[in-house]
Image (cartoon, rainbow, N blue to C red; front, side):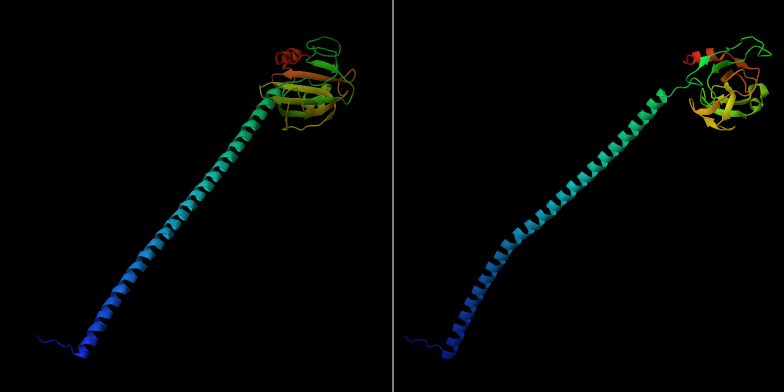
Length: 235
């Protein structure tokens, strides 16, 4: 039996090829291992990024909820203030009197429909004896329709006088004044000072002559004391 002898060149080539194959295998194995390791690292990185996005979304939602709650609270506070202010105005309106006495401290003298030599007809109003310069107030809210000497147009017997038209259609007159503090067309409130009492015109002494009328003119007066009583004011 004869032995086969390999050509030395061929032997060298085979060894090289085997080594190359082994190297390729090793390289491939290393590459596979590296890829696996890379996948293992990439997975936690992806999870961390996702968690960060979720945390940011949660934070933004929390901030948005806080902003919304703050806005709702501010709106509620503002609404409460509006309601409180409206209630205060309502209480003030209820407390404000609709009618008041034309003077505060006085002595009643000549009364309505009283007869005597002082008047050509019966007395058309109620007299309040007060010192000259006593503040005279509007008995009710309204608009000044007469103001001036000569009774504001009703005649010299009234001296300086004022007539106010009220919202209920009645009129009030204030006569024998020493000083007028309002003008025609001016709106006045109940209890607002409109003049100072005096002794002008046909007067037997310092006093306020007060009338309630159905028109702005002389001759339409009604009992002023009864009128004030009907509106809760006793004199």
